[in-house]
Amino acid sequence: MPEVLPEADLIKIQDFDQKLFRQRGTECPFPLLSGEDIIRNAKISEQQIVDGEDKNAGDFLAELRQEYGI
Image 1 (spheres, rainbow, N blue to C red):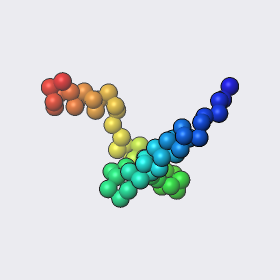
Image 2: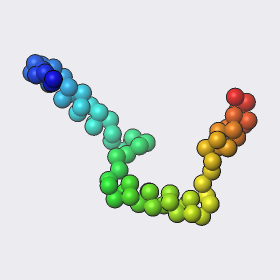
Image 3: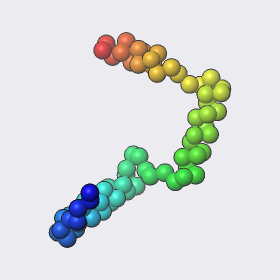
């Protein structure tokens, strides 16, 4: 059952949440995507698979292990 938090705790949570969003500025390497961006990226990925531009994850990891001697 959910419990009611004291106001001081709610303020701490809100401050933390705001810090997270402030960190996602222009310098962030992973900007937030819109729904349209996600759909566009999915369509591009699907086309790459159809065109044979995908790579088996196991093969890719094997190549990395060989390249870096892991």
